[in-house]
Image (cartoon, rainbow, N blue to C red; front, side):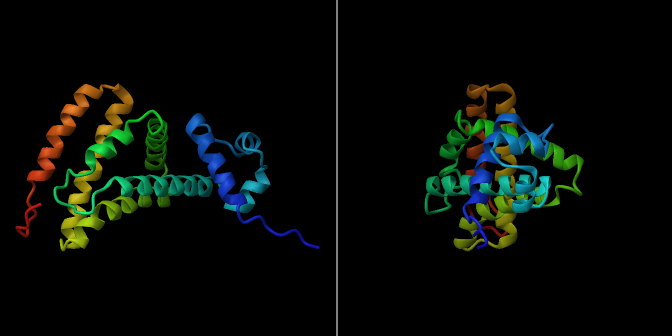
Length: 197
């Protein structure tokens, strides 16, 4: 009798992969030590995911899904003012539990920029998934997709810039003050069609 595939095994492996990547990074990532550390094998990982790049892509997809779920619970139902929810999201981003994940993200982003042919999906999703997430409440409130994506780009770039600085400096006082200025700027922006935010 043939063995039935364990449908939960890929998710178990991905959770273990994420834990391994957060702890060890990706600069020297090799399948053999990864497989050994998470209780699998090279063949097992390749069977479930296809390649090292695919493993990383799926791990980062799962991380993004979890982050979006957490941020959705923090975001108020109305988009106006834009700063609503941003401070709580920033507090979560800079928590001890979140920081290692952002360090991993920045490491992966740097590697993907060097090897865009191998990490095309990662680069695309790291931008498009978050733009769609940030723009969604604006679209629901009647803003055009173009304006919503432009504003979402400002928000995404701001958070990533602040977070990159925080991971390097841990200067929370300076960055919190800068965040206050940035959020006041977000609330003051008017879109090109004249609709106030």
